[in-house]
Image (cartoon, rainbow, N blue to C red; front, side, top):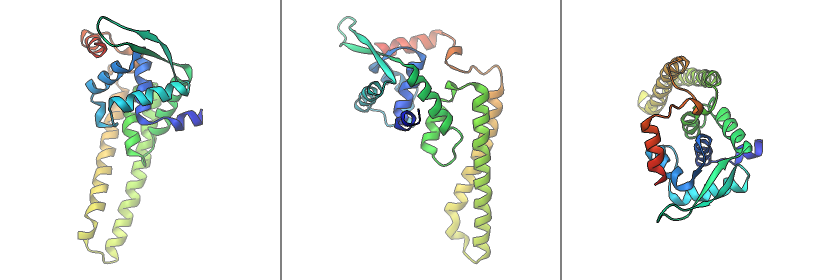
Length: 207
């Protein structure tokens, strides 16, 4: 499992997460990712997506269900998530969510955190909060030492900015953990209500 998880790219992780919702063809995945604005956190092009889908299939994380054609549309291959793919999806998110040293991968893990049980996510974000708080305290202590040694504050503006961002991250984590604890927050793919908007989004992505 370790090798399979290490092979996953952020885009590959998002493909597995989409297939955890339902069987899909690659074009539907692309349309849904764009509709959900995933291009903010992963490089998203048709070429990279199709390459990623092919690689996931080679590694046994997804399986080809066959080709179909509707009307004048081109032939499209539908894929399904395998047990190995589902396990890799959850392990990747579980591994990246508490880390404070890989912000790009954390952004993807956070976007797919709903693939883990609610209580697990609360605990993992708590671990991240502890790591961020520890690093912030270390940075502040180091900055104070440097200032005491006579370094002018003008040379520490970037350090001050990093500390301010870390403090804001702590505030956000506190608010996010409280929100996730609320039972009225819909959580997990199985709990997504089949609203007209959700079904329309899926139908639009297929066309």
